[in-house]
Length: 239
Image (cartoon, rainbow, N blue to C red):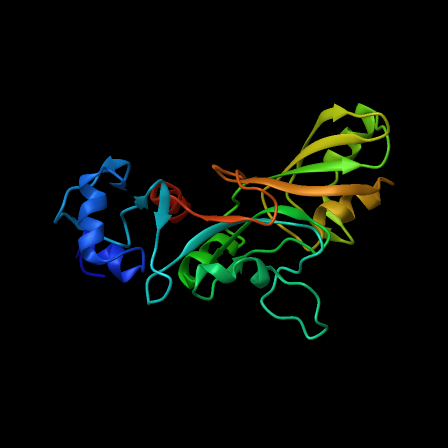
C-alpha cells in the first residue's frame, strides 16, 4: 500500500474530515508510532501505528491486513459460523469492519487470548507444527493438588497413543478448594490440557490462555484491540 498523507488517512478511516484532521494534528491529538504527528506527513498504513486521542486508527474496510487480540469468554466457539446457532467469536469482533479469522483455537469452554487476522500467510505460519510458539495457560483445578501430582502431569509424553511435546507445569497458588497451575505448551493438540488432566485424574474448573509468545493478554473479557506494530513485527519474525 502506498504512503498516505496523515490527513487523508484519518479521513479515509472515517475519523474526521481532512480539515478537522489538520486541526487535531496541530492540537497534538494525533500520534504516529508514539510521536506527535505533523501536518502533511506521510504514513505507511501497513507499518505505522496511528492514534487519535490515544485510540489506534485502522481502516474499517479495504484490502489491508488487520491484526487483533480478543479476550474470548467461555461459551463461544472459535469459528465464524455454527450450523447449530451457538455463539461464535465472530459476534464479538463485528466492529472490526472486515472479516478476520482465528489463529489457532480455544475450545468452547476455554477463555483468554485469541488472535484474529485476515493475513492468511501469518495464520499458516503461526499454526504450522514447526513453529513451536509457547502458549501459557492458567488452569484452575477442582481440588487441592499436591506437587507430586503436578509433576505427574508434567511427565506425560503421550495422549491416546499420540506423542506430545513436554509441557511445563508450575503451581501458581492454592485457593480454599482449588489449585491454579501455569501450563506452558509448545504445540497444541486438540483439547490437550483437558485430556492431560483427565489422564491423571484431575478435573478442570477453568482454563484461560494468558500469553502467546511475547504477547500477553491485556484486554477485558469479551473485548478486543488492534495489535501494535511492534507486536505484528514480532509475530512475523517467529521462525
